[in-house]
Amino acid sequence: MSLDANDLILFAHLMDAGSFARAAARTGLPKSTLSRRITTLESSLGERLVTRSTRSLTITEFGERILEHARKLLEETEAASAMAQHAQRKPRGLLRVSLPPDFTDMGLMPLLLHFATSYPEVRLELDLSPRRVDLLAERFDLAVRVANKLPDDTTMVARKLCDMRMGLYASPAYLERYGEPSAPKDLLEHVCLRMISSNGESLPWRLSSHSASWEGLPTGPLSSNSIGLQRELAINGMGIVGLADYLVTKPLAQGVLKRVLPRWELPLMTMWCVTPGRRLLPTRTLAFIDLLKTMMTSPVS
Image (cartoon, rainbow, N blue to C red; front, side, top):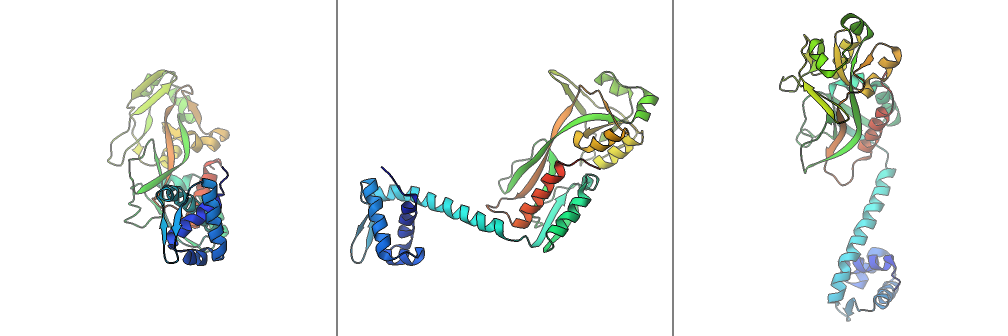
């Protein structure tokens, strides 16, 4: 049996239109051609799909079963066509984006300039805040969030931008002054720069090395909820800090930071791009997501 997928799509159009005349007008085919294609489809299937009379068109029981597959094929074809047309549209309009405040420390500026130059018809509004915005209620197009796992939300779609490996770092000046820890437990005797959660609680360090693990809450005079500030404090010799490897590419190359306990790692952190649960995103949103992906593959200055 050899089936023409286009004939199945025409069958779906026919049943949705309700008559050969209306289906012919919808598809742009002559009524005689449409009738012949349906007859060919019936011959290929070996079963009648519709019974015809001068005034009515009635689907058969077998036709009902085939129609389910034909409509799925039509929907997928229309979706692919819409996606192709959608991709060809020039990005324009208002784009509202929520970003973590530390994105200013992650090489965002040159890429924003590139985005503005490439898409001059897009009006970009950035909200740099540690708070978790309500995308629907506050009419944001997308938000970037960093977390091991996002809470379940059927109204949102989360796209993973990247996984970020995490390690401990300190400046050579700090290590020369205080010494270098040789085991995780030694961290309890060091000055550590701790992150605090949105509710003000200090977050413990959970380290792993192959099958071994360690958890502790180091102490130190400084804590904050800003990764960028933590990095600058560490560069200036204020203590040991936990940072994504991505954030220390340039400081390591410049020799202003050094890896501490290199065999031990903090849990992976994932960067997510979260959008409202739409089937197709505006081209301006897709263009900005591409910008974010580019940013995450470039070293931080």
